[in-house]
Length: 211
Length: 211
Image (tube, rainbow over all chains, first blue to last red; front, top):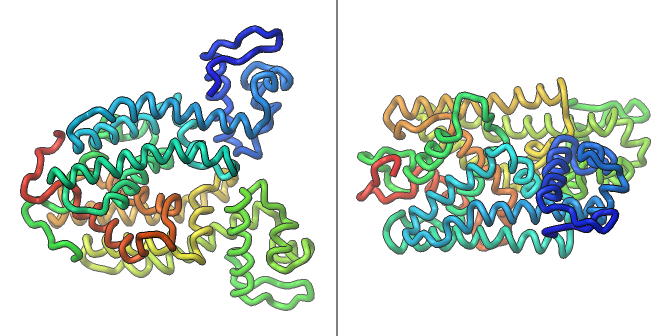
């Protein structure tokens, strides 16, 4: 993502203002769909003219790309970089889940996260670049699961299936979770960790595998 | 969904042909997005003229609604109705997961499933009707989890969180699973059941909850 953008008069646009534009655009795209949200509407919501907005973005597709890279920036800052150095692989995975859940439920980042996962529009190189960043996290999870299996902290499950079950359980949250509902964010984090890492079958009468 | 549709000359369109149109349209919408796939392109892919396609559908939005109801028909036929009557709640849940996974991986139903979960376009009554059908499955899962907790077959987890972790893990599959990849459908089903129901922590040294 550009850290600063040249404004109409060559004045530098503060990074915060640029991020705000990306956040507003993300909200509009989530609401109306990528095709449905016009540049005119996005500009208006940002308090800019259409020409003013085009000073900061090259095109609508570029705007989408920028939103996604911003989403990955946020994700790497708030999740990946916070947990990568945790030595214990199970603790690393549990903490990654907690921080990842909060990314999906947080008001400010929710729409950015949704766009990161529903980007039917991007193709070619741009899509490759985003996917490369996403894959870093997938590989990090796979490695952590493999490590936790090696240390005997978790059972011998398929690390790839475990990784995508983790991602599915966490990323699906935006489809159903209501911040003002019966479950608090804290309960959601605990509940997800409990279901996912604790497993469902009771400890005392574990069924044989494959039953 | 309409079971049969009146064709141009008043000739009844076979239900199979109608379903085929919905499947082709679903594939095009997944490929190009709802806004991106034109009625002209969908008609062409179906081997129909635009006017010919409009004989079978009222509008593009109606086509999307019909695809979703068709998806729910398939889902209820292949998943819900197959498992609802299984008396043992844990077996019911494990079988529901297996059949649900196959819905998501199956070539014929994959795109229909994707559209069911990424329908930013529908609003109002149409959206309510689809959501009511989806909620039937959500409640079925929640009830089954609660029952399995009551029988002591699974631990006292939050049935709602368990339900959405289940749905997330399963529905996310279309984002990553490659039918010709290293994991077979059979391995995927077993792996998902293993991770989700068997849990990750080893049986012998279960960590205390909340750790």
